[in-house]
Length: 311
Length: 219
Image (cartoon, rainbow over all chains, first blue to last red; front, side, top):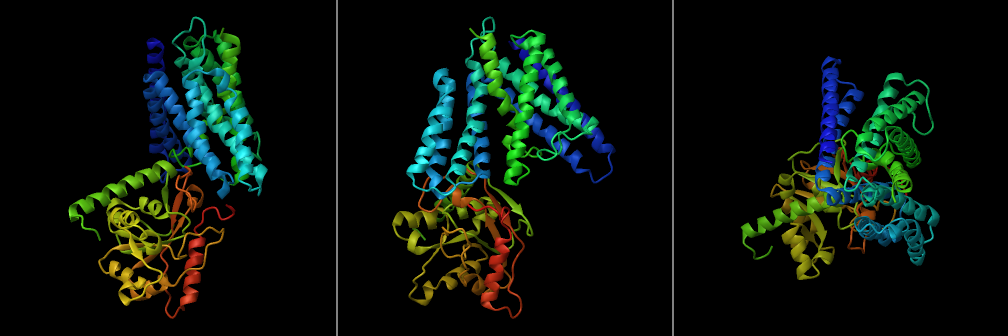
């Protein structure tokens, strides 16, 4: 596995360095003051450096690192989601429970690889018990709206995100002890797809994909990005249990889900009247702005691998 | 003030203020938005909406450590002076200044206590609603703000809108829910020549309300 990881790290280093140098040349040539697109581009690339560094560190700590990192990502994402949606004074204990009980318990299930409870704890137990607690408090004002927002918050920020470290619990024959590479594959193709869609959109974008939801997305960007990231998936087949053809198919499905995740996130933000989920990462908005695609891709990727590749 | 030696006392306050600011950041990711004023070491009275005990911690977390050391929150003696522990937390750890709503002699007069703090060159954080607000509307302001400004016209009055704190730590709760908070610092407000008390207080209240970054929110 060491061999593959070294190749990945060098690869990411080369890509990011190229991006930084390109942005620096563009900024040096552009008229001053710099346009907001260029400033944002530089901020984004810098944030990528930080994110890649963080992921690398977590990688070296293996299962510990990944589980803790994604529990923290869930915390940040849940905080953004709950901040944005409507809640009332009487929701205080339910909200506390989402942070203090649901996150730790769900990641404990990931850690102990208790698959049976991992897949149903939130969609069954939390789904039923949280509205029950809210009802017991006796405050029925905008009840369904509050309860639904809480469900969505933990499904998106905790349940879906926890499927990334849960990849480490899968038992793929002939791929023992190398599951970290599945996480690397998923994150690189899905985040890569976001970047590729952005680049294709900026270069060739003409026809808007969905002007009402996300005006910046274009057909050219989406198709170009998805095709390119399928190729990226095939290139990365050597770190996976997949053949190159399978890898490109899995990457295509994951990236399509990722694209849909971005679209849904845009719809929620638009409904709530904000542009970004938060302000955690300079130039990127909040945690959910960066992980919305991963959130949708992770559970599907997890179950694809589990159904077709595990025993 | 307590019997602790001055050095222990300063150390305690520094540790508390740095620690609380770190906790405030970890829980709420608090960030200041300077919209009309800039961070400065000028003597100021920060006035803010008040819904939670966390309000002044959040506000002071947005100031630099140097400014924090010479900025004191005004708190109600009826609540914070009730037991020795509360008084210790409020005065010795948080370096708040306690004022009494039912003062009896001139020395306890809230305005004279606040003026004596200002005369040491220090800044104040005050909550002109006078109490933690549990309603959805900003309460009418008490007149302290006007009296202080008339007595010390050189001190800047900075309106500060504290976002979301009523949801993080509502009145009556002691565990905070982690939600993102911002503190919006607005342009200084001053009493206009000949401006009457009530007109000024209404204008100051309106200036504070105008800072709410999400005025359509109903929670």
